[in-house]
Image (cartoon, rainbow over all chains, first blue to last red; front, side, top):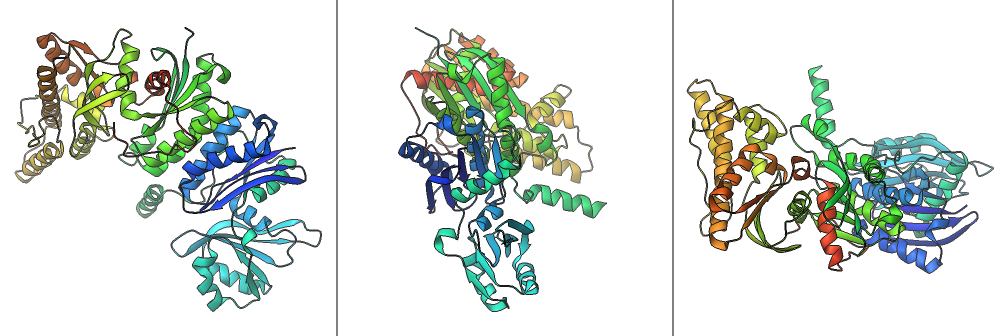
Length: 237
Length: 336
């Protein structure tokens, strides 16, 4: 089975092709450039370099959110266009899960931090058990950094932090973390489409997939207008 | 010569739209999924909500357009998509989808200017229409007076220096409590009002006779409302709507007349969402009759944002050999 992985949820733009047990190719950049100008040329370059036919792709796995709203919709619209044209399913992989999965086999707690602004991070808590089964201890959500670190301290176990929230919250972690902690090395410190595709394969085998029509990014946050409207309604109730 | 079939995709504001058009003139399908009911809750278009709705709808709308046109993607000659001007989030959805779809189907892909699309709606409505002609483009986001020199080739004579005409409709509608969208609501109220009851100014832009300004008019309406309120008078909304509409239509018609007199073109077209306003259509038509100029206007369904107009504009670009790269970006302030 051949899976195309796409991740444009953050500053990283990444595309990868994964066959059953092999990462055939991956093109990842973490550079301030608009994904709308880079993602498709990267995918095209990758496909041509590999010399494969797009029609040989069986499914598309994508980082479905959270992330930058703009990045998520460029990714979602691109994935929909491809999946609809090719008549193949879409595997919606939670962005934070995919980042954590990049530390496969780690014996420590895994705590991805994606900068969500306003002193918050999109985060979750993960581990690999003794059989290397991927365990989601806490599902991804936007959370205040102090709540995240309080939980880590309560777990009282060694932890690895990773994600684009690390440079943002490093000071806070260094001042407040009371457990043994470290930070992931560069190859695993950000989003990667190869990881999205690899984890996507596991989801696919469990029949967690959808169609181009039905797929929606999971922003994890309402738009500001919706939030304000809901607050007003709450205040008037 | 064989027929050229183009899929047009439009998502620059609050309509997700797709259409299949043959040779820029014959519409096989024209699907529009509007978001107006959602944005009405907020009194106007909320860009983030619009962007999300486009993502939810785009695949279904394109699929319906192809099915209703009885066209398989393989039969398409190209995919055309609006890449500006408009709201950046909504534009990115159409551009990203269109690029990916065209790439996967190995079809040429062409970015289209939204205003060029509006003008091209006239080619669909009037199969005999050929450039050169004059065109007045009026919508919620744009007000342009244009000389169409050739297909896709324009000379902009004038544009608004502040609010678009449709924007002024929305703002005044809100001020007199008619709600969103303002255009149709003002038009309806104006039918019961006296257009000569209140004298609102028609602003001119110094040194740029073809440019428009509508923010002064909007302020004049707001001042009038305040003044009446202070004086304890009851406001007749229908009269305000009718007088305001008359001032807008008057300014647009004055400019049109000036252009007809100066350039001597024998064809005049209108386009854009506000071009479905009955008072504007009647006023420009009367002007054209008076001047012996042939008047063109698209059916209301082609005035609103739609995919067919993008496919029509796309056809003429396709014929010229224009193709866009996979790095095409959305350009919210794209000029005509």
